[in-house]
Length: 166
Image 1 (cartoon, rainbow, N blue to C red):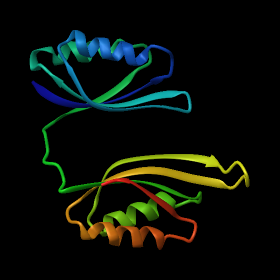
Image 2: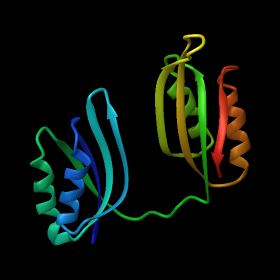
Image 3: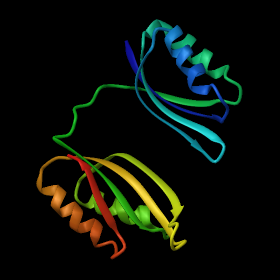
């Protein structure tokens, strides 16, 4: 069995996940991990699959037959997990460069971003543009958590953090 990371994009329509899952199953694949999103009329997916090596080419052909689908892939190998995981929600007033500020603070502390999901919305009671993100990180030592919190609050007085787990 080989591991592959696939990225897929296709104009969104009903039944796409089922169509993809059927192709994976039909070719003996195991769906290990995924992120699936509908963004601005496009279905976007990142999939980690384990597939028998002799079935890979046929699975790839089957996926490429899905109307309008574009696909990229790379072979992967299982990597060691970080010492600690930290997940939190961050809310701030939306502004250009905010994701850069956040990622700079995280990177400066030697922390790896494992998952980053963000949305733009307006506050219902004020109409203020808000940036919301759910972020999961891989920490190498416990002291990074406190330094990270301080660094993120230093971005601005409007930053609100809500730790989800550790």
